[in-house]
Figure: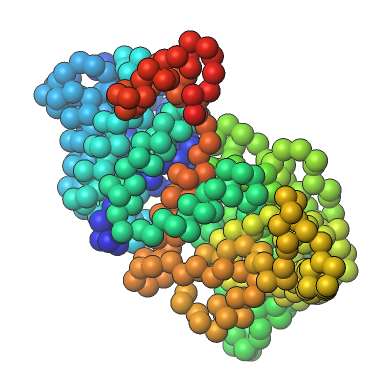
Length: 493
């Protein structure tokens, strides 16, 4: 896919709870804006929703908020026709108006702006009984728009059946929605997510588009909070990152964790967080301190337990193991050399959990530089164990009779750098997938497209097939089969 044209993403989330440059909000001919759209409006702007009414609303039925500097557009999604046409005509005019403003990305590291919008007209718009047709027209409207503009769109829904229907439609038209993207690897990883054999490792790079600082950026920000003199500050850059953190701790003490918390606690999840949450993996591990992945899961209507290295993961349900601590408990944050050294001895059970994942799941690594010595130690220990066990003459067989080998990889690393040496270093243990694109920003966006494809292939919900409101999505030859299955209350998939 060209990096100069847009892409249509599909996510289960809530508008206002994923970072975006502009948003489209559904309303009606009298500009009745439901309270659930408040999260899409800027802080302090949601008290008087009527104050957002665009000019010439009665005639057009679409337009930008009249609030100064607001990047929210409104669309009348009812069946009524206006000067802007029908609901989808008004949506297209709103999108064209967004493009005419010269919208640029304000999201760190993202080359194209991102517009979020809902599935229109299926709640109060009068199209609830025509959800299949709405899904088709919405996807077509968005696809034709991004084909002409360097703007990305994310269609946002919380409804499981609608999400699945959107993914089904895109799956049926892969070429139209993903163009030249190689879908072989996303399809394989998506299959593992469907089967429950995929786990996630989420690194700091995932949180940077949400506004979280890089490691270097965090250390520099903390340095400004210290009372060090010019001589110490001048030599700060000569220290390794761990020693820099250790030095900062000697001056800031336990306040360092509170300073970190202040920088990330109010952030909103990035698109990648939403896409990862949509994979519905039961097990995830992160070195991040923030709550962005957990918030992305909550925005889907689900929950995941947060587990610190001193805690035991639950036996059921989704959970996130936070290897380096959590801002809820600033003292748990691991940042200094002493804290990294202590991790190995004090967090053995947490390391065992990670190693169990390496042995039993396919680990998808996103946003991680793979230079954390503690994480690498866990990987090498499992590799050595596997070599001893599975390469002996009487090696055991996996479930189903398939012989395991010591060369079986632990997972896939999604990388933004074409680093041949690092790829060769990890080749015995991981597939190293370099994202296409020009520069780090272009590759970071292609990583989002990759995850979007994985989420499409990971979709398992077929409840929409039993819902006649989605009948318009079916091919003519499928109607009779699905009709009979609905009559029997069976799953026609």
